[in-house]
Image (cartoon, rainbow, N blue to C red; front, side):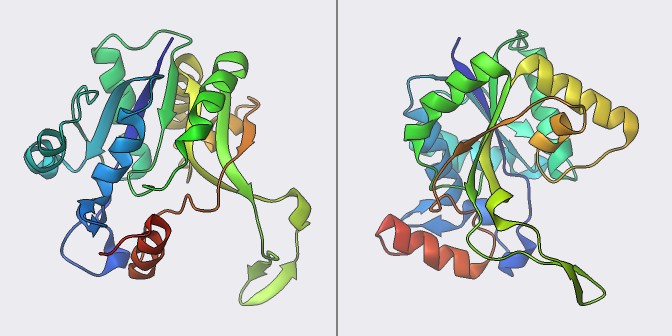
Amino acid sequence: MKATVLIPAAGTGRRMGGSVSKQYLELAGKPILAHTLTLFENHPLIENIYPIVPPGDIPYCQKQIIDHYGFSKVRRIVAGGTERQDSVRNGLNALDEDGLNQSQRPVLIHDGARPLFDCQCLSTLIEIVAETGACTIGVPVKDTIKNVENNHITNSPNRNRLWQAQTPQGFQYRLIREAFDRADEDGFIATDDASLLERLGYPVQMLEGDYRNIKVTTPEDILIAVALLGGAT
């Protein structure tokens, strides 16, 4: 079974400091979101793509991104929510509505502002999801990490056991749906989707990705992304 991708891109990008949402900022001649969609549009194991954007952005995204660049795998654009978790939940609801809620269907969730993901990992990620139920991309941390309270270091975790979580994160539909439903019942908010399964005791495998897979969040990230793409703004 081919995978379906949810791409939450409903943030306002306040840390960018501009009036344009970060997903529409131009990167090497093309909006960031268009770069991200291209990653999955061109992969043979991806069947459907669901961008998730602010409700008021849907007409703009349809015309300036989906239609303009001819993304044929985009099933439809989903209205995002207040928080990222709300947006992903809306995406899962869209899968229900469109009949893409088969128990073992691989569902990938990828940040709209990560346009540099190496798609050579996708086949392996989807295979692991099919076999084990859940897998996320990540990289070992390079720096020493400190736990800090009230501006004082409390301890230094063993760096050899620390990884930086990235996206895409992949799950069988039944698992991610249960994890979101349970989080709703408990009022639990997580910073990534894998955390919702971890709290229920489901094992999530880590697949080593690439340090180039940055999330474009600040103006400095734009400069880094341009350099990694080898282009100009």
